[in-house]
Image (tube, rainbow, N blue to C red; front, side, top):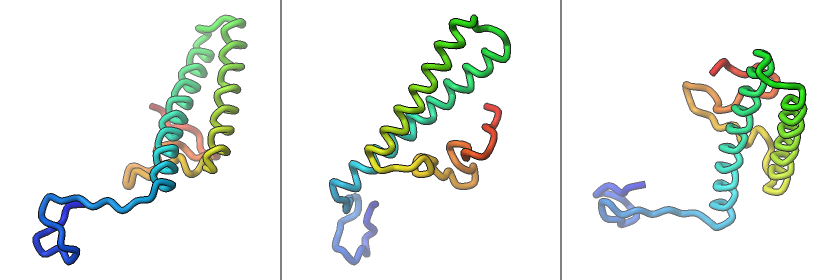
Length: 111
Protein backbone atom coordinates (compact mmCIF):
# COMPACT_ATOMS: atom_id res chain seq x y z
CA UNK A 1 0.00 0.00 0.00
CA UNK A 2 1.48 3.31 -0.98
CA UNK A 3 0.67 6.45 0.89
CA UNK A 4 -0.66 9.59 -0.72
CA UNK A 5 0.64 13.05 0.09
CA UNK A 6 -2.28 13.60 2.43
CA UNK A 7 -1.88 10.28 4.26
CA UNK A 8 -3.16 10.77 7.83
CA UNK A 9 -0.55 8.29 9.15
CA UNK A 10 2.27 10.59 8.13
CA UNK A 11 3.81 8.30 5.53
CA UNK A 12 5.69 9.94 2.70
CA UNK A 13 4.86 9.08 -0.92
CA UNK A 14 6.48 5.80 -1.90
CA UNK A 15 6.76 4.49 1.67
CA UNK A 16 5.23 1.12 2.39
CA UNK A 17 3.64 -0.06 5.57
CA UNK A 18 2.61 -3.66 5.89
CA UNK A 19 0.86 -4.62 9.08
CA UNK A 20 1.02 -8.38 9.57
CA UNK A 21 1.83 -10.85 12.24
CA UNK A 22 4.04 -13.91 11.80
CA UNK A 23 1.14 -16.35 12.22
CA UNK A 24 -0.96 -14.82 9.44
CA UNK A 25 2.03 -14.64 7.09
CA UNK A 26 2.85 -18.31 7.68
CA UNK A 27 -0.79 -19.35 7.25
CA UNK A 28 -1.21 -17.33 4.05
CA UNK A 29 2.03 -18.64 2.58
CA UNK A 30 1.05 -22.22 3.47
CA UNK A 31 -2.33 -21.64 1.86
CA UNK A 32 -0.74 -20.31 -1.34
CA UNK A 33 1.75 -23.20 -1.62
CA UNK A 34 -0.94 -25.82 -0.95
CA UNK A 35 -3.23 -24.15 -3.50
CA UNK A 36 -0.52 -24.41 -6.16
CA UNK A 37 0.16 -28.04 -5.23
CA UNK A 38 -3.54 -28.86 -5.46
CA UNK A 39 -3.81 -27.18 -8.86
CA UNK A 40 -0.87 -29.20 -10.19
CA UNK A 41 -2.29 -32.40 -8.64
CA UNK A 42 -5.63 -31.85 -10.37
CA UNK A 43 -3.95 -31.09 -13.70
CA UNK A 44 -1.88 -34.29 -13.47
CA UNK A 45 -5.00 -36.26 -12.58
CA UNK A 46 -6.89 -34.88 -15.60
CA UNK A 47 -3.99 -35.68 -17.91
CA UNK A 48 -3.85 -39.24 -16.57
CA UNK A 49 -7.60 -39.66 -17.13
CA UNK A 50 -7.24 -38.39 -20.71
CA UNK A 51 -4.42 -40.83 -21.40
CA UNK A 52 -6.44 -43.64 -19.84
CA UNK A 53 -9.48 -42.78 -21.99
CA UNK A 54 -7.28 -42.76 -25.10
CA UNK A 55 -5.85 -46.17 -24.21
CA UNK A 56 -2.28 -44.85 -24.01
CA UNK A 57 -1.49 -46.64 -20.73
CA UNK A 58 -0.73 -50.29 -20.12
CA UNK A 59 -2.45 -52.09 -17.24
CA UNK A 60 0.74 -51.78 -15.16
CA UNK A 61 0.91 -48.05 -15.85
CA UNK A 62 -2.76 -47.66 -14.99
CA UNK A 63 -2.24 -49.33 -11.64
CA UNK A 64 0.84 -47.22 -10.90
CA UNK A 65 -0.96 -44.00 -11.87
CA UNK A 66 -3.98 -44.88 -9.77
CA UNK A 67 -1.86 -45.64 -6.72
CA UNK A 68 0.19 -42.47 -7.18
CA UNK A 69 -2.92 -40.30 -7.50
CA UNK A 70 -4.42 -41.83 -4.36
CA UNK A 71 -1.21 -41.17 -2.43
CA UNK A 72 -1.06 -37.58 -3.69
CA UNK A 73 -4.63 -36.97 -2.57
CA UNK A 74 -3.89 -38.47 0.86
CA UNK A 75 -0.77 -36.30 1.18
CA UNK A 76 -2.78 -33.17 0.32
CA UNK A 77 -5.39 -34.11 2.93
CA UNK A 78 -2.67 -34.57 5.56
CA UNK A 79 -1.03 -31.25 4.68
CA UNK A 80 -4.36 -29.42 4.87
CA UNK A 81 -5.00 -30.94 8.28
CA UNK A 82 -1.50 -30.02 9.46
CA UNK A 83 -1.97 -26.37 8.48
CA UNK A 84 -5.62 -26.33 9.60
CA UNK A 85 -6.95 -25.60 6.12
CA UNK A 86 -9.99 -27.03 4.41
CA UNK A 87 -10.14 -27.78 0.68
CA UNK A 88 -12.39 -24.74 0.25
CA UNK A 89 -9.61 -22.57 1.75
CA UNK A 90 -7.43 -23.52 -1.22
CA UNK A 91 -9.94 -22.43 -3.83
CA UNK A 92 -8.97 -18.85 -4.61
CA UNK A 93 -11.67 -16.50 -5.86
CA UNK A 94 -10.50 -14.94 -9.12
CA UNK A 95 -13.32 -12.41 -9.27
CA UNK A 96 -15.18 -12.39 -12.59
CA UNK A 97 -13.24 -15.47 -13.73
CA UNK A 98 -14.72 -17.58 -10.94
CA UNK A 99 -12.68 -19.81 -8.68
CA UNK A 100 -9.27 -21.31 -9.40
CA UNK A 101 -10.30 -24.89 -8.65
CA UNK A 102 -13.60 -26.57 -9.52
CA UNK A 103 -15.90 -27.21 -6.60
CA UNK A 104 -15.97 -30.82 -5.40
CA UNK A 105 -19.50 -31.31 -6.74
CA UNK A 106 -18.76 -29.73 -10.15
CA UNK A 107 -17.19 -31.49 -13.08
CA UNK A 108 -13.83 -29.93 -14.00
CA UNK A 109 -13.80 -27.39 -16.81
CA UNK A 110 -12.17 -28.48 -20.02
CA UNK A 111 -8.70 -26.90 -20.02
